[in-house]
Image 1: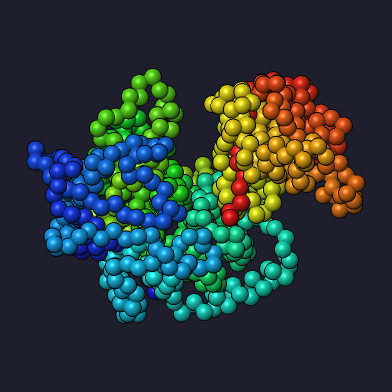
Image 2 (image 1 turned 90 degrees about the vertical axis):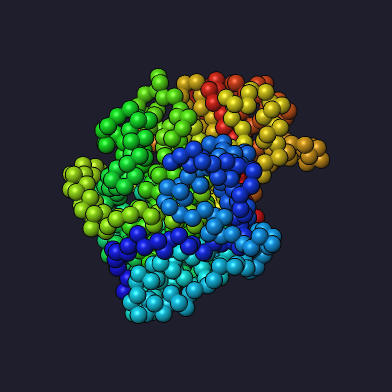
Length: 639
């Protein structure tokens, strides 16, 4: 059985000949970009062909166009990549990956093969020039040649579309307990389905603060499997108190495995094997301190830069900048990088996640060592927030290839498991009293959604989850996007309708000048106001899926009022159905008696009163209100 703490020399030089994901993806020296040699005044010139992946595999922009983070040119990325490879004593790409000069550069097309599983939306099997090596890995694992397995996985740069992904992670977790784990899950799944009979439940991990809720764009069937898998894990492993890596790990496993019992067997192996998954809050609280201490020891220049940027030597302040390190790896990095990290993680354990986090800090130091942002006049918290955003941008717009990133992690020399364990224990002891005395957040969210909640400047994440959970399940698979914001787009109804008119469904959130927050979910498009034939019959339209809400400040959750026709003891045909109405200069949500929300003339004033459609009270105390901010989010289905 693998032991995550098994040591492997990082000075062996095996990382230098990483097998690339594409043949001829780099060419020799050209005049297109310059790379400065930090150790002298020589300059090298090279050009790299950009990788091509399906859209769902890319969330970074190499040329900076359209990026909301750092804007970097291709030449600046080349300089960063070359500087990192030189500092690690890795060969230049023109030497390591150079195809014969007479050959043309080959750039792989997006894979057009079958989907890996029914769970994934667009993760397909495609052709790759990288060798499979699965049987060689299995043979070495059977012979307990752990170092050889690690070297093979570190050195072989499999792309996301490689056929090996259907079996690699399962084989790395396959032990004598594999079959019994699968049977245990199958039996529990039958019991789960019998008891719940379609009722929705919410795993505790969805309410845990600091979790990484990224399912990497699973389809609805995959999202349903994911929730069931998490619930059964919680039922069978009650000793798990806090394990934020389980959600993204289960999601990734489901992308490449149709059988969720295989996914459970993998997670069960990781939980049973020392050094893979930490399951207590104090362990995760200490992990950021451990990473900072390792950066200080192994990447001193990055540590010094961090101190200089914050203008402090207090490690308790510096550590706040890297407390989101799990998000770097599982939320912000593009999928090809996440998959390569997990390849190594299944062979080496939690230690490789630490290596990857240190690599992000190191790459950040290379990106920001020149042209430092002027922090004068900023508070300490503003500086921390700015640097956390820089780390996020570095991960999102990663400036090195997957092979260079893995080599950067591997080339952290003399990083011993015993050192990591010693530091981790030290910081756990220091933080234990603080963490254990801190009450675990009470689970406020009552229901489940299957994607990330939308980001609003008016409501927090728990409120966003609660609002989305009352929408139909088919609309809980894609995160709503901000389409209109009063403070940015102005108070003109012309601008409002130009951005909102054609949206499928919408969430509207209003904040009055008195601080009241309320709004609605509108189940139909506002463009129906143009249907003259239908409007001659009724000026109202919409469906019973709509609702209105107001924030309860004491509960810190919304009070949601759904259509009265949804009640089991009433006839829906006899209930008022005044859901939505609009003209060029006004809109109404929830009429009958009074209007639940009415905005007219300009988007600065409105009125609210009791509505018989939703049996809702006046949504703010004033009745008539002035608008401080208004947001509209586009809600769409996954199809």
